[in-house]
Length: 176
Image 1: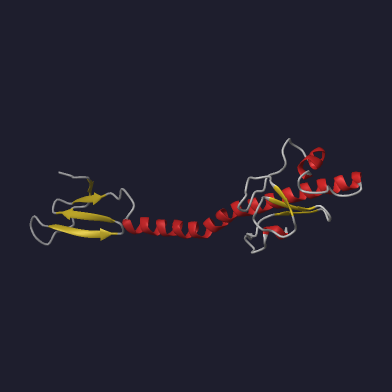
Image 2: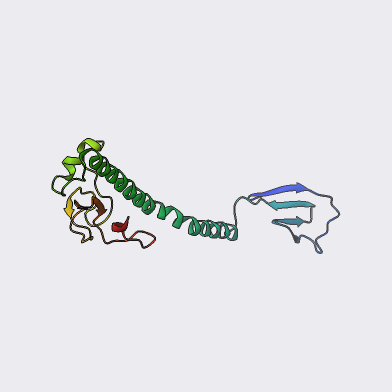
């Protein structure tokens, strides 16, 4: 009977030290059994050991621990860059309006309609951050109070994000 052992013929000079006994020899990762008739029964290695699997899982865990923060912060960075780009577009539209009309738009009530010819798309840009994320509401003022998505000062032409929250570098969104 072989039971998954590979039989291999060897020279009959191996003795067992007694009649009918078996001598076991350990060679690396394979175990050989010698019997009195001079055959070797060798067990084949058919998988990974538990130690090998644990080492691989530990290495993958370390790599994930190093890489995960880099991937998680990219979402916040993208949102912050989106806010900066939106502010830049609206501020450029305010400057174009002021250049053609001699002064910036008068107030927040008409800001969206006044800037419509200077902005692409049919709607005023929405705010990507803060308590009013996704809204395009505008309020008069210069200090963030989280009341609306945007704040606009008609006398100076200042346009800010109306959020007292901070970005990943602890800079207030309203100071962008």
